[in-house]
Each structure stands twice: as structure tokens, then as C-alpha cells.
Image (cartoon, rainbow, N blue to C red; front, side, top):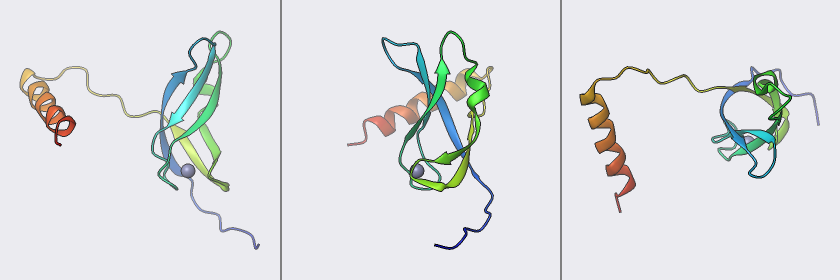
Length: 99
Ligand SMILES: [Zn+2]
């Protein structure tokens, strides 16, 4: 196998999960930019670690030759109008019960 091209790492949006019954945290990549599956990355110990320190470039578990950048999702805006919330709720319900 030849050397891979240097490609810019893709962004992988993560959410923080903890393992019930333990103090171990994980970053959950819900939607891998390469394979579309979900991956877990250890984020350290709840007591001692700052999980943000484990964000950044990581090899993708589905293809260790490729990197992706673990990144927090953009924060939703805190202040939203009643109308927008209602619309969102209605849209969510439609998606959930669409079958
Ligand atoms: Zn993947």
C-alpha cells in the first residue's frame, strides 16, 4: 500500500456520554463522516479529566489511516420565540410518528 494523500481531516460532531455505574466518559460520534456509523472515544475519568482536552484530531476507528476532528456541536440559541418552539415541536412529532 502506498502512502495516503494528506487529506484535510473531516469534522465529527460528538456528544459526551458516561458509562452508567462508572466514572468513565466517552465521546460519541453519532454520524461518522467517513462510514456513517457511530464510534466511541474515551474522554477520560469523570473526576480527574477535562473531557474537552480529548477533543481534536483522532484516527477514525473505521479507517485508522484517516483522521477526523472531534468537535462539539454548535450550541443552540438559548432565546427562542414561542412560535419557533411550537413549530419545532410539531415538526418533531411529525418525524417521530410518521409511520
Ligand atoms: Zn467511521
